Amino acid sequence: MQLQNFMHYTDVGCRLVRMQRYEWRGRKGSRDEETPLQRLWFLFSAVNMIYQMLGMVIYLFLVDSWEEQPGGVVGQLSETCSIMGIMLFGISNMWMLVQHRSDIESILAELQQLYPRQTRQYRIDYYYEKSTRLMRYIAIYFTFACSYYNALPIIVLVYELLMESQHFRYKYQSNTWYPWQLLTNPDSLVSFMVAYLCQVVSSIMAVVFMTVSQFLLCVFVTQIQLHFDALASGFGALGAGQPGANDQLKALIAYHIRLLSITRKINRAFNFVILINFATSTIAICVMAYSMVMFNVFMACKYSVGLVAFLILTFFICYNGDQLTSASNQLLPAAFYNNWYEGDLNYRKMMLFFIMRSCETQELRAYKFMPVSMITYMAILKFSYQLFMFLRTMA
Image (tube, rainbow, N blue to C red; front, side):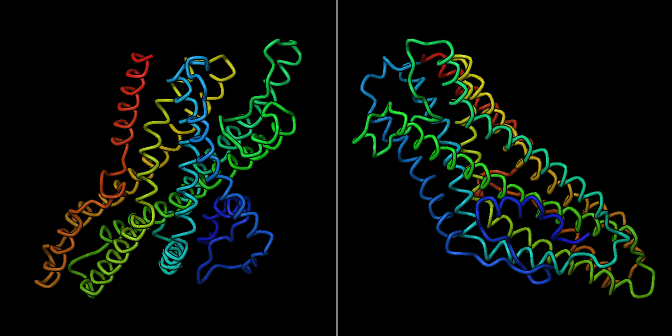
């Protein structure tokens, strides 16, 4: 079992968006060379996602009569803003993965140096199975959600054709304006197919960027958990009266300092995108729930999938933050219940400084605004429900 085994789902996501996998010293296997075609596809995907955001904003300004639209003003805003939330989160994750690539590879290199050579006191298999199972469930659900989201316009189109509907019209995934609609009929088959394919690409890329970012966070948190667990076990096995106890304690303290440094780097890389997720999730959960009760059964099913996706994604982030906090909280009792009173003066001083440092809980933060924990998750759900009830009252 190697560190690169934990990166399986992250590597698969990188291949899907034609982005080079993350490399570090000690990783086995040859590095894939990026071709011009891959760079071109990545650039097109990025521009396409950004345009989807811009196109939805333009659509909102070009609507002729809000009252004649399904759901009225609030309904149209809810329907459009819910998809904008997905695009915004996908774009922010893409920016983070590209902008902080060197930082991410630096963190992976440090984790590779700390990766245990002797696995006796490390529960590597347990943490590998735990993290892989979580990432596998997330990958399965988002594959289903993205497939359903992109298949729904075709399903609705076939249904209306079979029912010989008098109000037949082409309806793609989201309300987006495109430049070619100035030259051609927006309700033509060609315009529909081009817009449909653009939105298929943008939705797939947004979902993959979101999941790759969260899989990276899961890998980092799992590794820190593994090392905090081993550090707590090391303090439990340390005897203050044994020969060489001072040197062993110094090694454990140095180990702890490196873990704190890595945790700060992880926070710097992810804190902004976590904040974006919390902000967009709070609004998206509200507007998607509202859209579910405003439109027909097809739209309700569409937005229920998106609603569950944001619930799962936010839960995944908060769960990882909670796990990191719980792992760091093991260190204080492990050090305190060590037989430090049997050590010499230097040993007791070092143990005292370690206990003082361990009093500061290690946690993920949303750009210094709030800690990432299950308490935060419940606060987001509560505020989203309050917004939902406000929209229901205004409708």
